[in-house]
Length: 352
Image 1 (cartoon, one colour):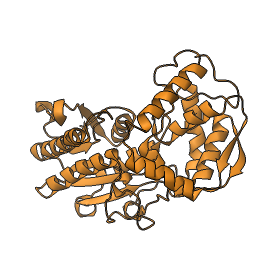
Image 2 (cartoon, helix red, strand yellow; image 1 turned 90 degrees about the horizontal axis):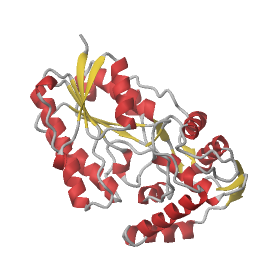
Image 3 (cartoon, helix red, strand yellow; image 1 turned 90 degrees about the vertical axis):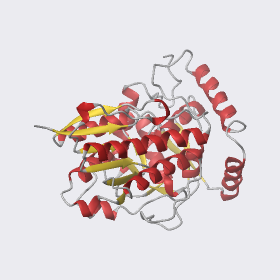
Image 4 (cartoon, one colour; image 1 turned 180 degrees about the vertical axis):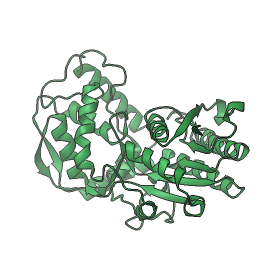
């Protein structure tokens, strides 16, 4: 008989990938939706669950940060409560490497200071803190902190920048790229899902319970290399190499830190949305990425962000996608095929 795993939090590509990986590992998977205020109700059919995996909650960006944090924290506490009530052997909280903020030491290890910079980062750290509080009360917690996620079913993350490329490079074949740029590594969605299954099934409780693990690929690379691989898959060619501009970057980051989203990024993203609707002639298909600039993306593009993953490697886990530039083209082609990204290759955007 299959072991029972409960997934708590928002549905979507991450939940689907983790459910598939757990299914391959012999689990019967049931998803518990999050109710108002982050409430979770397992129901009698959840009894005997061996594993609870908490994925976090998507909350509206325009909602007050304190309310968003309250919902996230309540859901994390609810997942921990369920894990204790059903007698689960493991509670896996899928957090994010962004809780560190800008890493002070590289590669960034799990014990580094947590200094989240944006509302999203602070909210995710509040949720993780709630899980750690539950661990001190007996929850069998393991935390995974993936780096930037990408994959053929994700509708966001680093590939969203490619919609901006399509918008600003109409009828152009060659796209200028910056010289080198900040160093970061990514995490394929399938590898995150495999990491969840790996720590869930690890036989030694002492090796995983009460511990956090960074999850990422094996090759931190400069932004220019990530961008060149993605542009080629999108149908463009890397063009003139632009020098980095630390002073300009510093000025932009000052604006990002000190000007509220409603004043700076919200109007900018509305203008990008209107421009996108004009160049695509008529509304794109459901799920198509619309260009937008996120505060988190600007921070990630301003400094090196790479992490020590040796703790997870010591458990015997290895990524199936160790180098993002080798697997990113497949992801881009899949997103083009599903019309999430336009494969323009320098031609005018299609009238979807």
